[in-house]
Amino acid sequence: MKNNNAEVLTPSHTLWPAFRKKLEDKLFIYANNKIHNQCNGDLTLTIEILDSLKNIDIKETLIVMREYGGNCDCKIASNVARIWRNK
Image (cartoon, rainbow, N blue to C red; front, side, top):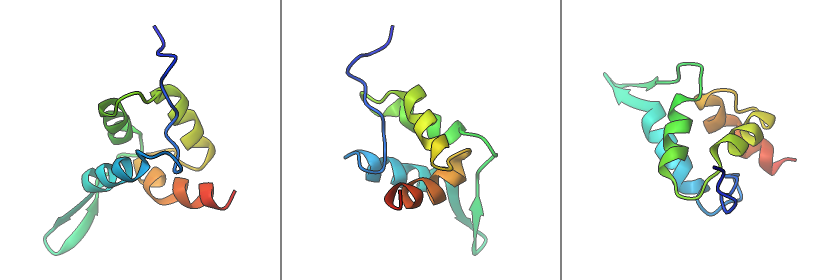
């Protein structure tokens, strides 16, 4: 059953900074004096983080993120907020 109170997470949402930090912490690992991108070309990390946030409509949020260039975890980290601000 759909939660009618669930919200879409966008860069203007109050939870966006926390989401972005969690995503970047999981996505970019510093090891052997290099930054390693953990993106697998999908939305696994994004979905995991969205699922941990209260009251977020995951399905609708992913639709919006894809519209703003977020087709995988690293693209969400790099594109969504930038494109959102320039819309």
